Length: 266
Image (cartoon, rainbow, N blue to C red):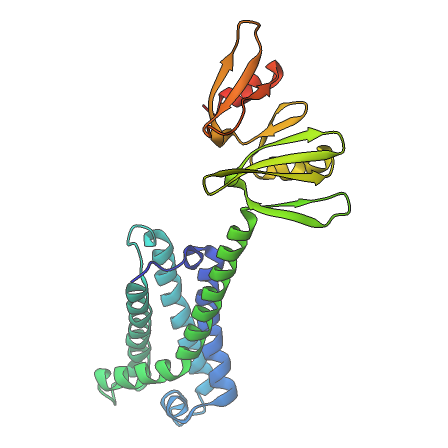
């Protein structure tokens, strides 16, 4: 099965489980008081609130250990969905073992330990399944949003002087941007074809967009994508130009003041 999204390993995500599941258990028990769990924890002595609070603390302790371990081992284990589900089931089983131990002591051994384990596991399962499912679904949607945002963020949105989006293109496809009078000319690859788009805008208005997507100024009128530079050449007159890895594109002039910065990419 596919690896689970990295968002599951974040501290904020682990805190959601660590705090959310014990808190949900406490609220659910005190508000709805399901018959089986109430009978198990009340003991006929009006001890429901006390025992529920103690059980919540037990759940919290187990979750702290479990989720800290998960963050530490997340990438080492290459956690996939199958292993993640097994991990969550193991959490419930361990919770039920400690819960049953506490209740057996409170009942002073009247009921066999393993009988109480079964009842404890069933009670935790019917209550805690809700936050587990809700949190898992919420994080899956959050991961999809993150992935979509990352994908969208890789697109360069070129807007004209009226702030209307005229061209959206992957930053990796852009070779260079050249200013010429009241226009900027965007040279980019579409498949194997070199294409150009003339945009009515100033180079200054595009500076933030260029820096955000890693294009570097190489001359007063040019921004260039360093990932497409094949080599920097200096002719006999000392003029520097950038030869691109696309045969159809002409060499781009490079000012001496920008040479060192561009050379770092090669």
